[in-house]
Length: 284
Ligand SMILES: [Zn+2]
Image 1 (cartoon, protein in one colour):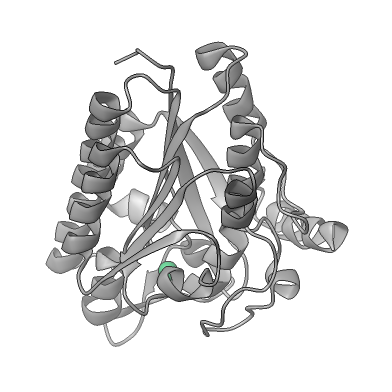
Image 2 (cartoon, protein in one colour):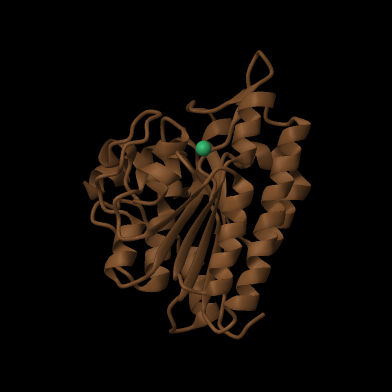
């Protein structure tokens, strides 16, 4: 199954002239923590990030990670909101342009991002939210004795498809509560890996179009929250090697009626960047 995933990723990477897949997030995080990747992972650790870790934290392992999943903040969005994405890149300078998978919808994409497996392997191949059956980043972290928290809006994809695992689930009605909870978990320092999901930009692009005032507000909020996460990690995780990543799933484009959508095999929907920030302990 590893080879099947790898060949699907390669096909998209070749066609979109992109060196990385969104699935590369999982083997990268695993290698940084020195934890075996999930069984069906066909993605590859991102070499420039691994090299940077060797320079930043030397022989040591990563000890804390926060993965900020800002839904639909892809490359098409970066073209329209350059100042906002410059703020994200300032926080996390390792920008890794990556290609998504098809169909480019949330549960399919995050299923791939957190398993390193292609949709045909992880099983979610349309907009549906079953519990993922194959091994994920969260399973291998739990098996390695790590404490994992997934913080998200209730009944969203990330809240549902990774259930039934040895991790803690925090589920809320609003993004704001999810974010406040994430900050509290960092402050309390009980977890090794926190996934924090934000739906705001994607929700607004479906309603009002990708570049509406509402979307501008949510994109800005995403950048501000990312900055806050970095500041709080530096404050409360100062004694740990730490990793913060901005992890969108897909982009989105405007359609004839003025609203936004995604799910298509086009650059506007398929191209994203993941942004990595690596810090050594006692470094501010
Ligand atoms: Zn999405």
